[in-house]
Image 1 (cartoon, rainbow, N blue to C red):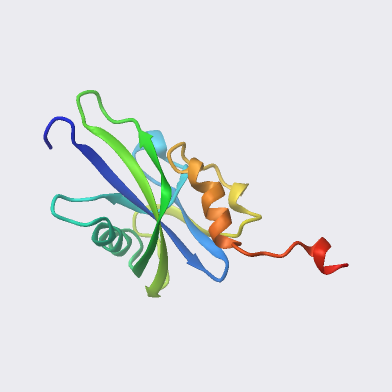
Image 2: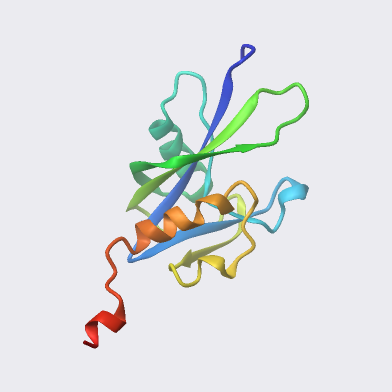
Length: 147
Protein backbone atom coordinates (compact mmCIF):
# COMPACT_ATOMS: atom_id res chain seq x y z
CA UNK A 1 0.00 0.00 0.00
CA UNK A 2 1.49 3.36 -1.03
CA UNK A 3 1.86 6.37 1.27
CA UNK A 4 -1.42 8.26 1.64
CA UNK A 5 -3.56 5.25 0.83
CA UNK A 6 -6.44 4.31 3.07
CA UNK A 7 -7.17 0.76 4.16
CA UNK A 8 -10.91 0.21 3.65
CA UNK A 9 -12.68 -2.24 5.94
CA UNK A 10 -16.31 -3.12 5.25
CA UNK A 11 -18.90 -4.30 7.72
CA UNK A 12 -22.21 -6.00 6.98
CA UNK A 13 -25.41 -4.93 8.71
CA UNK A 14 -27.26 -8.10 7.67
CA UNK A 15 -30.95 -7.41 8.15
CA UNK A 16 -33.71 -9.98 8.49
CA UNK A 17 -37.22 -9.62 9.88
CA UNK A 18 -36.53 -6.24 11.50
CA UNK A 19 -33.31 -7.35 13.21
CA UNK A 20 -29.60 -7.02 12.44
CA UNK A 21 -26.89 -9.65 12.95
CA UNK A 22 -24.17 -8.90 15.51
CA UNK A 23 -21.05 -11.04 15.93
CA UNK A 24 -18.86 -11.38 19.02
CA UNK A 25 -15.12 -11.25 18.27
CA UNK A 26 -12.86 -14.14 19.22
CA UNK A 27 -9.58 -12.55 18.04
CA UNK A 28 -7.36 -10.67 18.47
CA UNK A 29 -7.18 -10.91 22.26
CA UNK A 30 -7.53 -7.11 22.62
CA UNK A 31 -10.97 -7.29 20.92
CA UNK A 32 -12.12 -10.65 22.27
CA UNK A 33 -15.69 -10.49 23.55
CA UNK A 34 -16.53 -7.22 21.80
CA UNK A 35 -19.42 -7.11 19.36
CA UNK A 36 -19.17 -6.03 15.73
CA UNK A 37 -20.83 -6.09 12.37
CA UNK A 38 -19.11 -8.95 10.48
CA UNK A 39 -16.74 -8.02 7.68
CA UNK A 40 -13.13 -7.30 6.89
CA UNK A 41 -10.52 -5.68 4.68
CA UNK A 42 -11.11 -4.85 1.03
CA UNK A 43 -8.37 -6.60 -0.94
CA UNK A 44 -6.51 -4.84 -3.79
CA UNK A 45 -8.61 -4.91 -6.97
CA UNK A 46 -11.75 -5.84 -5.05
CA UNK A 47 -14.83 -3.63 -4.74
CA UNK A 48 -16.40 -2.98 -1.35
CA UNK A 49 -19.40 -5.09 -2.37
CA UNK A 50 -17.17 -8.00 -3.46
CA UNK A 51 -15.26 -7.82 -0.17
CA UNK A 52 -18.50 -7.82 1.81
CA UNK A 53 -19.76 -10.92 -0.01
CA UNK A 54 -16.41 -12.72 0.43
CA UNK A 55 -16.08 -11.83 4.11
CA UNK A 56 -19.62 -13.01 4.92
CA UNK A 57 -18.89 -16.33 3.20
CA UNK A 58 -15.63 -16.74 5.12
CA UNK A 59 -16.89 -15.57 8.53
CA UNK A 60 -20.50 -16.80 8.56
CA UNK A 61 -20.83 -19.34 5.72
CA UNK A 62 -23.66 -17.33 4.12
CA UNK A 63 -24.30 -15.51 0.87
CA UNK A 64 -25.43 -11.89 1.12
CA UNK A 65 -26.42 -9.16 -1.28
CA UNK A 66 -25.04 -5.71 -0.39
CA UNK A 67 -27.82 -3.12 -0.50
CA UNK A 68 -26.61 0.33 0.52
CA UNK A 69 -23.52 1.86 2.13
CA UNK A 70 -24.40 3.99 5.13
CA UNK A 71 -23.05 7.54 4.82
CA UNK A 72 -20.85 7.50 7.95
CA UNK A 73 -17.32 6.07 8.00
CA UNK A 74 -15.26 5.54 11.13
CA UNK A 75 -11.48 5.82 11.45
CA UNK A 76 -9.88 3.14 13.55
CA UNK A 77 -6.43 2.70 14.99
CA UNK A 78 -3.79 0.66 13.20
CA UNK A 79 -0.24 -0.25 14.10
CA UNK A 80 2.30 2.61 13.97
CA UNK A 81 3.52 3.03 10.40
CA UNK A 82 0.43 1.36 8.95
CA UNK A 83 -1.92 3.25 6.64
CA UNK A 84 -5.02 5.03 7.92
CA UNK A 85 -7.95 2.64 8.12
CA UNK A 86 -11.68 3.34 7.88
CA UNK A 87 -14.73 1.16 8.49
CA UNK A 88 -17.66 1.51 6.11
CA UNK A 89 -20.92 -0.22 6.94
CA UNK A 90 -23.23 -1.69 4.30
CA UNK A 91 -26.74 -2.97 4.78
CA UNK A 92 -27.09 -6.44 3.32
CA UNK A 93 -29.73 -9.04 2.62
CA UNK A 94 -29.25 -12.69 3.52
CA UNK A 95 -29.61 -14.74 0.34
CA UNK A 96 -28.46 -18.24 1.32
CA UNK A 97 -27.64 -20.05 4.51
CA UNK A 98 -28.10 -19.49 8.21
CA UNK A 99 -25.21 -17.60 9.84
CA UNK A 100 -23.00 -19.97 11.79
CA UNK A 101 -20.01 -19.66 14.07
CA UNK A 102 -16.84 -19.91 12.02
CA UNK A 103 -14.62 -17.12 13.39
CA UNK A 104 -16.76 -15.62 16.19
CA UNK A 105 -17.67 -16.57 19.76
CA UNK A 106 -21.39 -15.84 19.39
CA UNK A 107 -23.99 -14.41 17.01
CA UNK A 108 -27.18 -12.53 17.91
CA UNK A 109 -30.05 -10.99 15.99
CA UNK A 110 -30.74 -7.59 17.55
CA UNK A 111 -33.82 -5.40 17.12
CA UNK A 112 -33.86 -1.59 17.44
CA UNK A 113 -34.79 -2.08 21.12
CA UNK A 114 -31.96 -4.56 21.85
CA UNK A 115 -29.10 -2.96 19.87
CA UNK A 116 -27.62 -1.57 23.08
CA UNK A 117 -27.75 -4.92 24.90
CA UNK A 118 -24.25 -5.94 23.75
CA UNK A 119 -20.83 -4.34 24.27
CA UNK A 120 -20.06 -2.95 20.79
CA UNK A 121 -16.47 -2.36 19.72
CA UNK A 122 -15.57 1.37 19.53
CA UNK A 123 -15.32 1.23 15.73
CA UNK A 124 -18.82 -0.26 15.31
CA UNK A 125 -20.72 1.67 18.00
CA UNK A 126 -20.96 4.92 15.98
CA UNK A 127 -23.17 3.12 13.44
CA UNK A 128 -25.88 2.09 15.92
CA UNK A 129 -28.19 5.07 15.36
CA UNK A 130 -27.90 4.64 11.58
CA UNK A 131 -28.72 0.93 11.88
CA UNK A 132 -31.61 1.64 14.25
CA UNK A 133 -33.03 4.03 11.63
CA UNK A 134 -32.67 1.42 8.88
CA UNK A 135 -34.40 -1.23 11.01
CA UNK A 136 -37.38 1.01 11.78
CA UNK A 137 -37.46 3.56 8.93
CA UNK A 138 -41.14 4.46 9.08
CA UNK A 139 -42.39 3.21 12.40
CA UNK A 140 -45.52 4.97 13.57
CA UNK A 141 -45.62 6.07 17.17
CA UNK A 142 -48.13 4.07 19.20
CA UNK A 143 -49.36 7.33 20.74
CA UNK A 144 -50.48 8.45 17.28
CA UNK A 145 -52.38 5.21 16.79
CA UNK A 146 -54.26 5.74 20.06
CA UNK A 147 -55.81 9.03 18.88
